[in-house]
Image (cartoon, rainbow, N blue to C red; front, top):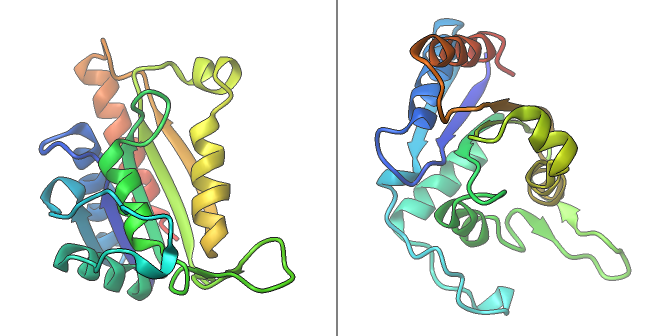
Length: 193
């Protein structure tokens, strides 16, 4: 079975992202996968890297060290986050900035345009909640956050993207709509990795 890390990337407690992450985890565990779940809202760290020098960054706080240990442990990562102003919440972006470091997640190689990927052999799925209807997200806005997340964060470090799922629109949704979204997340957990 697969070792799965699920990141509830909403900085607020009790979010719908947390509910989606919980449904995914429940079904993945029922299928026999080993699951670890992290909630961004419970992590204590400074999201500001604070320097442009990769070699002189701040020491990782305990929650970031634990999260890095989970990243190196997992075979599949699931990131569940809200779409805020077309991107990641600041604390989630800060988590990526602070943990996915040069020499750990990737390594620059002299003479090559792109660095060596150090987290290969892992896959990733992204679940995004949004108030923006899916067709507007894709066709009007161009799904820029998807490109950033899949190509410039996950693939850049070696993760193979295995799905980008938008759960929307949340604003104005009815209980039946949200129930379908939770069932969809559970279905993804059932088919995990």
